[in-house]
Amino acid sequence: MSSNADLILVNGRIHTQNPAQPFVSALAVRDGKIVYTGNDPGAKSWLPNGGSEKLIDLKGACVIPGLTDAHIHFSMYSTGLQRVNAETPTLEEALARVARHAERTPSGGWVTGFGWNHNVWGGNFPSAAQLDPVSSDHPVCLWAKSGHACWVNTRALRLAGINGKTPDPAGGQIVRNATGEPTGILLEEAQNLVGSLIPEPTLDEMVDAIRQGQGEANRAGLTGIHDMDGPLAFQAYQALHQRGELSLRVTKSIPLEHLDDAIGVGLRSGFGDNWLRIGSVKMFADGALGPRTAWMLEGYETAPSDTGIAVIEMNALFQAVRKANSAGLSAAIHAIGDRANREVLDIYAEVAAHEPSGLRNRIEHVQLLHPADAGRLGQLGVIASMQPIHATSDMLIADRHWGKRSQGGYALKTQLKNGAVLALGSDCPVETLDPLVGIHAAVTRRRSDGSPGPEGWYPEQRLSVEEAVCGFTAGPAYAAGDEKRLGSLAPGKLADMTLLNQDIFSIDPMEILNVSVLGTIVGGKFAWRDARV
Image 1 (cartoon, rainbow, N blue to C red):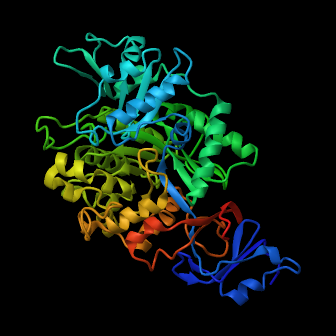
Image 2 (cartoon, rainbow, N blue to C red; image 1 turned 60 degrees about the horizontal axis):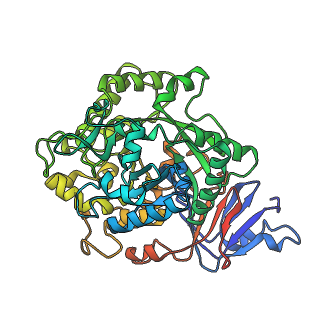
Image 3 (cartoon, helix red, strand yellow; image 1 turned 120 degrees about the vertical axis):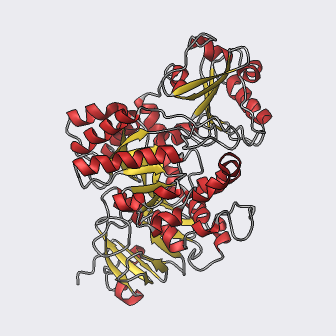
């Protein structure tokens, strides 16, 4: 044995997710890969002479494979760190934040932000009239927490040429008052009427923003992400990679509007290296629950004649999936409502029947399935890319809008039982970046205040801690075709680890919210390290 490890961890509670050796106390790393897992004496045998600084006594700390967020809008999160945080308990506080941001923005400059949730504010959409008094010198555009609606002021409406005569765009809606005038709320594709006017950050600005966001992600215990944002983010990741500054492993999706560009230059899912790889082509079938734009088989309990919005014609979506798969690109389709999920499953089934590709297609969110469709992801080999935190965040509005149908909503356990691979994430900035909050939600189906009670919301859908951790480790690795390199701690695999101050496998699951990250190791090096380690 060659005793020249770069990093040795001993005296830990190391959960490997490797079935052949699920629990060890020590491991050794060399050249960014794990070379040994086992006991303390075995790991110490890899200690080079005079290399005591390479040995870390974990003092009983918990170690798990590096956590990966399988669905995140990372450039949106990163740039949002510098914009209005509109996720407030009251409308008045959101308006106050806009006012403060406007005060330090040059006259005429855009004020943008993210995170408002009208359901928290009483259920009614806010309006341009409420924004106007605090932003008369600035156009304002604030995206909802769902990402499927935006709230703009009158100045922004005028810049976009939106008035009572403006038709709704395909796949979108301009919300109007009783006289037909726009209220300041734009749904789905209608958001682009204003969004297209907002200047994008420069590449340098995006690089700086993602660098800051990456630091926050590492601090939260993340070692990898599946990013769902656009080309500018991809350029920023490449720039950081060239400079040797990436401390997250990035699987980058391709927006549908750039499918032909990707095919034209020959990109295929999985192309790249250990740091930056091509993922799936991101597509949308419908909207979201909050603004009632999720596409439903039957009307909402709160609006029986309303079945949501299909944001693309289904034949066009079928053709896009077929084109992508034929070119070696997997598809990742956003589907919330039961009608949207059924249509997407039908498309995947038809494409596979005619041109089986072996690609790992995905459905993003899988929030509501009709009982007849519950087993179809597993049968078709479609990845269930789900976000556990949505269940606890949405449970009240899901019960209100979907009623008894919510029993088939956010059904993590059902997907596992039916053979689907779970790739779990946050949908940040729609929800928090913190993966431990997602693990807590998956295991308890309860909010931080304990609601809705000890058993949780539809408790039959609770995961075990091991299943939840697997969803943030092995699941994303499999979804990206990376299971030979990532997802567990075993000799030969990349040395990505998350260190925790408590063993989440043995504590009261509600206490997972109080666990802190002690360190984040990517490629055998600390991307973030607490002073206690």
